[in-house]
Image 1 (tube, rainbow, N blue to C red):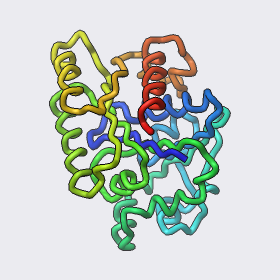
Image 2 (image 1 turned 45 degrees about the horizontal axis):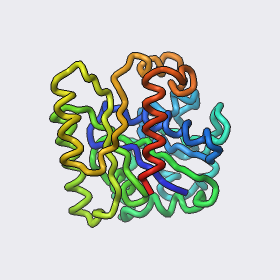
Image 3 (image 1 turned 180 degrees about the vertical axis):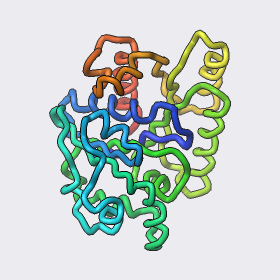
Length: 247
């Protein structure tokens, strides 16, 4: 099972829309795919019309009192399952710290699923925390959406520095442009700068689009309800590129 973390320290950069659309695209070739909605806001769960609730909450999950496969819910899409969010995930850092668990607890939690799925997408909350450190330890690659603005670039630099300081130099981080508006001079300049500073920068980018915003209204995925739209085609190009270079 390949584990892909859709992650950035900064919020509001398109992590969830990227996670759900890329996960759906991975199923189109028959790959067995799972999403773990780690954000207590539960946006991925909302898109898939699944209640953001797991039995026993984060406590049962972290302490492994409940088997993780019992928390998995099927979606309306073939080969695509979800571990829902739970509002108690907001306490997950405290639980990890209180039990003196190391940064490999997620690896232990996910071990039973190793041969059940081809891909696991982690829809991650923003910030640096014990949760994110577990995410970084368990992941084969980090797919990092970046809005082409100075603040977003700053958080990408912080992520790189964090990985270097925590002996994660071998972790592959693949940034890509998110919510890119090429009418804006600042966006164009940042998109030119990023590949120079980050050699792993993906060539594909997701444009700013009201069609993506419509996903929340329809509770559906743009690659499903409007597969020929520019944004949907951009997600498809992004997934094809990830498959080519991520491992």
